[in-house]
Amino acid sequence: MTYGSPEFDWDVLTRPDVASLLAGQLGFSWLDLHEHLQDLADDEYFWKPAPWALSIAPRSKTSRRTAGAGEWVVEWPDGPDDPGPRTIAWLVSHLVEVFTERWEWTFGGRTRRRDDLVLAHPSAEAGVAALVEAVGAWREGIAGLSEDELWTVGRSQATPVDQQAPFAHLVLHLNRELIHHGAEITVLRDLYRASSAA
Image 1: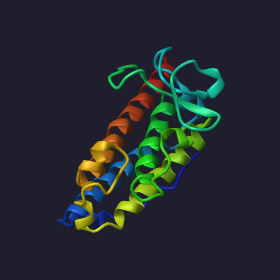
Image 2: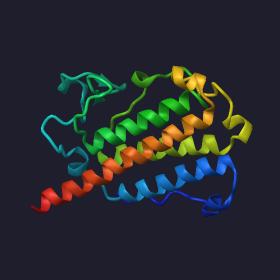
Image 3: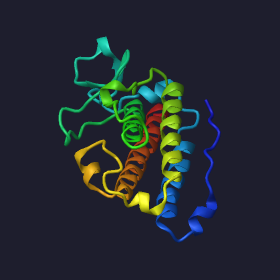
């Protein structure tokens, strides 16, 4: 499925203030990743670069640690330094988790954690739609903040680090997540096409 391009205010790149720097980096990075998610097919979404790659699966069909609510779950790494490969489905679901949980603990009811959220979606179309919604909600939330609010310590309560840091640091962290995992998704699409051609 082809998704309409997210709106991006190019003028934000000319404004010399912290809010514009943060929003500009997030908005431009999302514009780029969004373009790379166009026409993502289910075969590509679930393609494993190695047989042991982490992915998403029906809850009853995986023996790995899992995260998320619902019938489909995200297979979770055994530890924070697990170097194992991931599928695009896993990366999309992880980004849904990152943006939705941080939104919940900043702008939402501050009640739902990772395992209370539906993170995994059994098709590329549904997964990308969930990511569009999660990133859109986060962008809308931070767009309404003043510079003083961006420097507020503890504005987000998602993690102990968030509780102790000026909020702008969390915005930068989520920007990095989007850039890092977006690059992985782009490389996996390249590898999938190369393997299919071979």
